Length: 209
Image 1 (tube, rainbow, N blue to C red):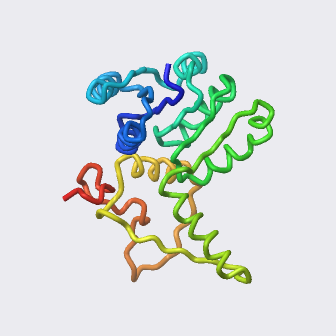
Image 2: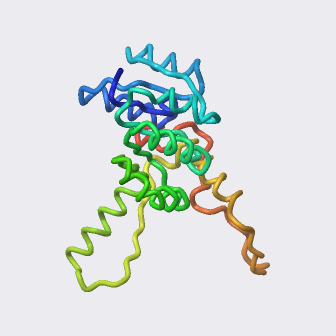
Image 3: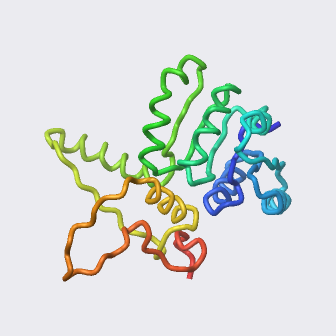
């Protein structure tokens, strides 16, 4: 059994992770709930596959059995992170995900003591949403140690975001408490930046037309 399992490998980010893992000499298990897509991807990359969903804790524990590290790429993470973190803590497997959802980052951080007790690493936010901005903030802090406020702007690449990110944004919006809109009849309402996307699939790919 491979020491690395990628859950959600059939998604846009999951495919990139699987391909990169192969490039650096790893042979991960590709996993997810869509059996047809997982098996097709695994066959194309000559990698092992597992198919399971996250509804049953026992099924998830069985699904990640044998993995030392689970790389979780199946969003929306507000719905999928907790069952996978539970399984990793139970199985003693390290957990890494690519979420950018603040509520998930806070929820995973709140389990620090539990993870330390089980000698398990919980590392959410290892994707583009978090790593570049955190690195930039740390760099600016080193260069300007007296600074007390920082505002970052990140330009988009490729003209949009992937379907999974768009679904995650919509999930967060549905779970957020509603606020009474401020009256501003002279200005039409605009969608938040995370939902301003084009209809092409995988538009976060810089090489996409």
